[in-house]
Length: 529
Image (cartoon, rainbow, N blue to C red; front, side):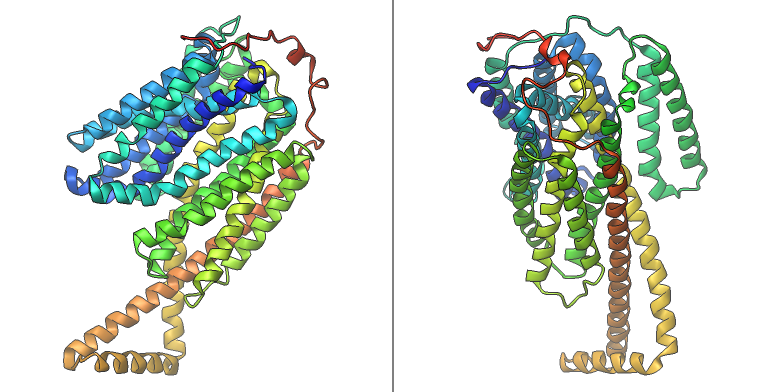
């Protein structure tokens, strides 16, 4: 599967980055369009959430299948097929006539979008020389940062000028450009020995992933101890046991779980899971925090995240190039320590914090996360044989996908629980310190009287204002609790980092023998699939 480096490797790189940008843009822009979709399609929040959930489930199922599909079709064919499927799904989503058709078309979109992420990563990893693979991962992480950076503002503008359907049509030109570049510049490759179809492994893996994501998605709504959620977790556990046993006992498994015998890869997957939970959890919390506590408009919140996301993209490139020259482990440790520090700083943020302070913390947070991502990817895939990089990247990205779903669900659940706890605590504190409550009530009444409120209306407005203030204080305290947990999670990531075998990534001429034995395809572009 290896693509030899040279001047031509930058063209396939551009094609891959555009494909990654298309997927990232699609993920980032959807949340902005949810209210418009609900109004246009005449549905509620409970139903519209499946527009996102169906895509996540399909994407998660497709990611581990990249190894087997790639061995059958070849890397180039699979990337083109996935991109075209994603484009078709996007067009159909834009043409959806009700919420049910939109969910079905999102599944089609997920079938195409699932393989693009791991395929793009494996293409860049194999295309770039060994001493520049950190740079390749940095470029790839930049494309995934740039998409969410422009998504809120771009999506909001498209919805205001056109409608929500435009957010799907925007994928078409970018996706076609990506496919065209790959078609005409990437050499055609195919594995010599395609893997046989492992039916038990495929279906047990699909049941495990679908069951897990359904349990996580529905746990918030029905309760984690409900009969439905418990049953889903039981089915998920049984399917996982069948999957692992099957993949360990057959000679040509669908997903080679023996990859986990590689300690750096296993530790990398664990770090990726924990760090992605933290990343997606904070991505879920921070926009709500800006709008609810600091009273930003949705458009202002979207613009606020633009500079941190761009900083994250630029630092990803810098960190990736730096990881080619120094050992990834010190970079990971440094990034996690800074991330822990910033999370602790968020524990002391109150409603009076300045915009400059908030923006500074956001910038530091995104820079620290970028400083972890590129070295982590390089360290995890380092030591994986070239013919297994595609499979390993699929498994690695699967951990991130699952962590994203788990992180958002747990963050939302914990946020609601901690806000309720602090509401009770603050209510009890009011009864313990009645003088403080009286002073606050008097201040609110005076302000409302100056606005012209009198009589019973004044009493009602005073009560409502005090209740809202109590809710805001309880919510802010809940945010502070969660950031403390995120700080502890970042510290926890240091343990698997220390267990990773360090060392500078090898340069050409010192790679393992399997790389030297890999046939070198022609550098000349192949016109056709």
